[in-house]
Amino acid sequence: MTSLSTPTDSQKKSFLSPNQLQTLLEREEVLLLDVREVAEYQAEHVAGAHLYPLSQIAQLPLPASDRPIVLTCQSGMRSQKAAAKLRQHGLTITELQGGLNAWKQQGLPTVGQTAKAPISLMRQVQIVAGSLVLLGVILSLTVAPAWIGLSGFVGAGLLFAGVSGTCLMANLLAELPWNRG
Image (cartoon, rainbow, N blue to C red; front, side, top):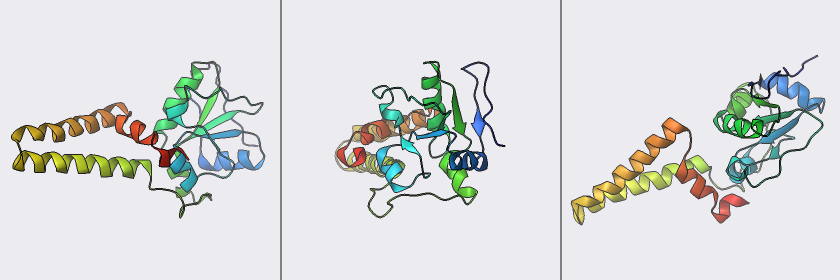
């Protein structure tokens, strides 16, 4: 029997492999929460996962379940942040090791509406950031050299996102109507 490792301390981290999670989901022994944004969830998610976006976690009610709670995201970074926030409220949280990427690497099935969903939030960030950097360079060459500051500002934001794991641009883009679903 596959079981969750139950931490003795609510702050202790606990992980499941994709195959362990699949077994528990088939037996309906866990509640799976996907902490990605609406568009990402709509495009593809693990069957049985419930949407619980990290960007809205402060406004959402705490998950109530008689089953253990497992969190997932794309790679494990956002579920780690969500788990830390939920553990602050005394919940015992387990995370899917490696997120949806690891799930798919194991050849496990996903569901979604890829054709109807907008492009992923991370691709939107790349498009907007790249456009702003390019615009800053063009304006600095054609209008005034000070416009290079726009490119520097965006670069600093991307550096901050990489170091901290918090992308302010992604949080802003997540609030746009097409990403809210």
